[in-house]
Length: 117
Image 1 (cartoon, helix red, strand yellow):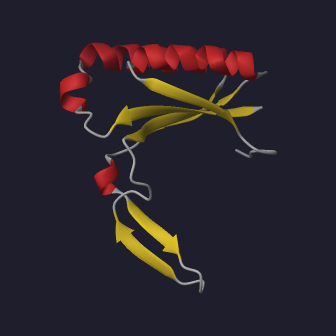
Image 2 (cartoon, rainbow, N blue to C red):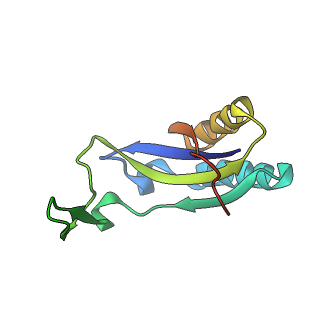
């Protein structure tokens, strides 16, 4: 089953101040471990929410485009992994490793149905 492991950061998070070379080395090590275990399907970091563009569907079917994230929140998704794991327990163990390496909060969520890729 495929799982999304997403890193969440507070909106005032400053990457330059908080994520030095030692944190990047820990993240690289977790990535290497995931590849070696054969569970990593895809990984990606995201730019700041200020770089987002949102498309809002209106009741009449029209789409309105706005700058910025879709939701106004106190946190945002900073990056993610898509993992192929045998079960939730395995995915949660990778989530623990990801949270420790990224020094942040992580959400682990299974994909609905048959995720392709």
